[in-house]
Length: 162
Image (cartoon, rainbow, N blue to C red; front, side):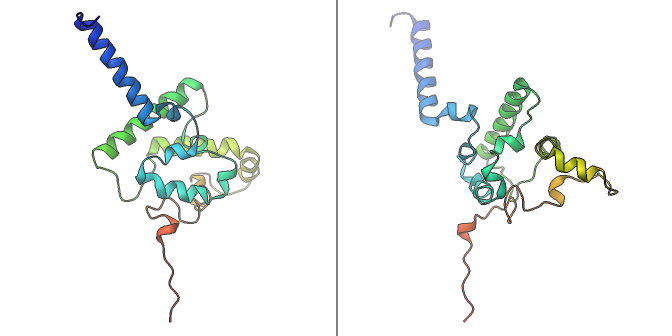
């Protein structure tokens, strides 16, 4: 076996891939747990804000941020967003304030409407225009009172005035 370079190369690749999967807990990224989204330290504050929000009891990050129209589209978008995040974080290009792209905004809006369909139907029967995203009025809902702030709650210190 060791005399065949192809066998040696394939064996080394399998061992390296296995080590990578074990060290990074790669299977967790195929699941839906919000804690997995917080594995990158730059997402700590977004996760903490979500953790203190009303949506924590009912939704994971993937419920809002990924499409649910079919399984293939779900995993394609999960991979696309994940690889985009890896690239941005690995190259040190993370923004000071995180904002959803136009593509992500459409996904999130669709998921808001899907989960809150009954409320949306009541709103749609009103006279107001429907040219805004849900979070323009409901700023504090998904990520808590601080929104997608880069500073977690625990980093804020309130000192009494003396």
